Amino acid sequence: MKNRRIKKSSSSQFTSARHAHFHTQVYGMIAEYGFDKVHVPIELSIEWKRNIDIEADLNNQSFAHTETSQLNEYDHKRDELLYFFFGTIRNGLRSPEAKFKSASEALTSLLYPYKDLQGQARDRKTAQIEGLIIDMRKDENSAHMDTLALRSTVDMLEGVNKAYQELKNSLTRKKAAKPEESPDDVRRRTNTCYEQVTDLIYASYLLETDITRKEEIGRLIDALNQFIEEQKIAYKQSQAQKTREKKN
Image (tube, rainbow, N blue to C red):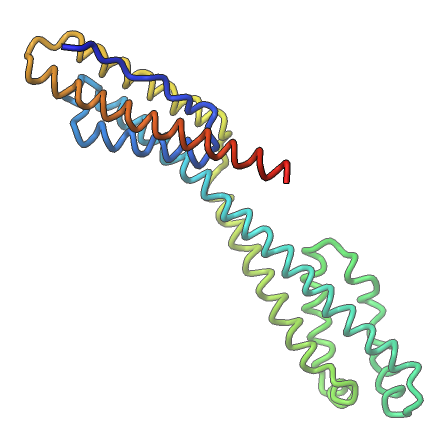
């Protein structure tokens, strides 16, 4: 009977997503066989799974990055609408048509509190936009808004501003609910658990006296080694692809 050892995984070189995937799959393979059959304490298996789940959760923060990107897009859209809004009023001041000039003059007198609004800090900008919308929707300004065809612009500005604030609130709640851990620290803990588990599997294989049970553990080691080799190949292929893309 051949002596089986679990191969080195090289998972420390993996990207965060690949690292979490690797440990999730290996955990599942061992759990399916039975941690107790290879003398892995329940506390160790729980700790390993907990760290794997934390890693996966941290990786999902890439979605939070997507949300941050969306927040930036909303802010950019607010600025575009504000530039158009203020630009329309400024252009109206130079209009040869009296109705446009009169409407622009009336609205300009209300805009001093909103000077340089686009350059304000984002939270202040959000509050000031709310104030601007309230002012522009007052009855005395309704006719001027219609004359300059700015009502739809204000409606769009309100929608984007609300979307910005709702997403900002959502991100704030998520950060408060889940204090961030260092990805490197979590990876180290995951790797430590993995090393302890695989050492116990190998020890169980060496010390098992029952031939049938020994062969079962050997097949588990073979399956783990097959998966480890597949992951190494996939990692090398992805690195080669990145190198080619950089050259092109």
